[in-house]
Image 1 (cartoon, rainbow, N blue to C red):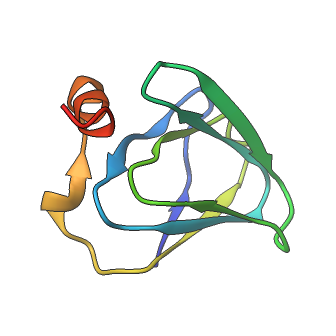
Image 2 (cartoon, rainbow, N blue to C red):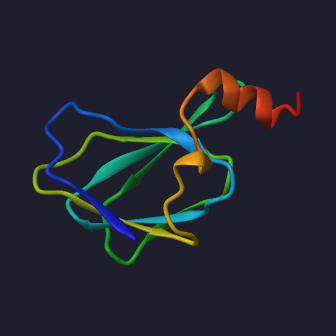
Length: 101
């Protein structure tokens, strides 16, 4: 697990997908948006602002977090330990992998 906090206004966090890792994101304090982008570039935005709601992100989900309110805290719960090799940080590589090319 890890936290995202003290994010300055206008900043974006994330911009990646995981090959195998799955994650739950919870707004412990304040609010923020989770933006999921599919391999065609279509975006779905979910606003998190309640500590009793969580957003599940299965493996191979491209995401970023934005629109953080003052003093917001995001709790990230993962089903595995951090592995640098599991990250996909290039959207074109993500598209290729999702399309099975």
